[in-house]
Length: 137
Ligand SMILES: CC(C)(COP(=O)(O)OP(=O)(O)OC[C@H]1O[C@@H](n2cnc3c(N)ncnc32)[C@H](O)[C@@H]1OP(=O)(O)O)[C@@H](O)C(=O)NCCC(=O)NCCS
Image 1 (cartoon, rainbow, N blue to C red):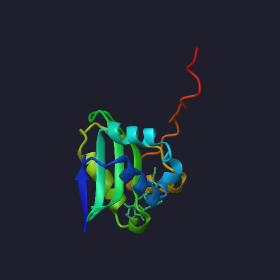
Image 2: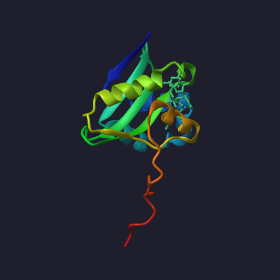
Image 3: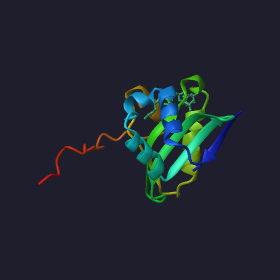
Image 4: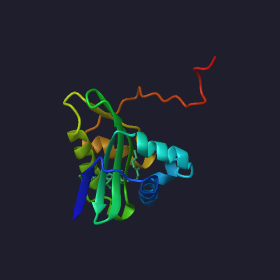
């Protein structure tokens, strides 16, 4: 049976490992240890799924708990996908948030169809600024 934890600390190595096992590792800077360590230690809402001692899913967010929650990384081990774990990780994330707080995310291409199915609204006016683009003197 899958068990879920709210804000139980995990190491950067555990995070990298579950991202790899989900395929999301291909789209995250998993070889940049400083970055991965910063991602784990500076997020303020982390929901994890466990099969015994094995980390099988993660939802990592940054949030003010009242208005906006950016769900940066949602990943489920390939061997455990399509069993409702991703959905449950999002339910538990949402349960930590105030009633006006929206979940916001950028879908990976392979997961783009997933979120509409769960009730998310697709917004065409999402903008992303890379660190090395614009806003410079
Ligand atoms: C996307 C992901 C998190 C979904 O987690 P999951 O545990 O497999 O999903 P669930 O079992 O909760 O799926 C819930 C529903 O969505 C459907 N679904 C799952 N993955 C889907 C996908 N990629 N596209 C469309 N629908 C999908 C399921 O069939 C299920 O439908 P149902 O409720 O009618 O049975 C997981 O597949 C994953 O880690 N993928 C690789 C990494 C990734 O792309 N992450 C998202 C980054 S934005």
